[in-house]
Image (tube, rainbow, N blue to C red; front, side, top):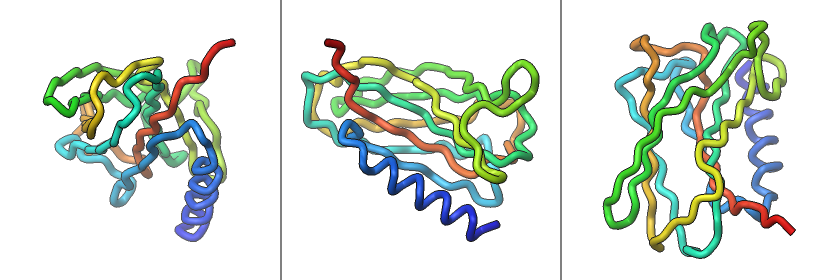
Length: 157
């Protein structure tokens, strides 16, 4: 299973790294497919272009044994000057019939959630993103990794 997971992860990384609109993409793995509620995730995103609009996606990779319908998180953005904005998000993992949402390969499922659409970073520098687990359980099992992707929003013609 570990070889399959590594192959799939590398394939996805290669395919997604070809996108010209991505300015940042990173995932953090969970030991034993478990995210402890007390462990916040941190990402540092360098931003140079303060004119463009960006979309920010939260990405979840889970296994078929994930027992919940969703994943609740707080998403905090810290600007280079220290300004802080926090929003709560509920990322749907299963539909109303209990079937997994997203794309699956073997035991792994990938879910993308658009957390911020067409935002403008008003300062150049390093933005820090923090993700906090808001589930009611100390340990949320069935999660392989959690990530963030920042991409330039497509211009409408």
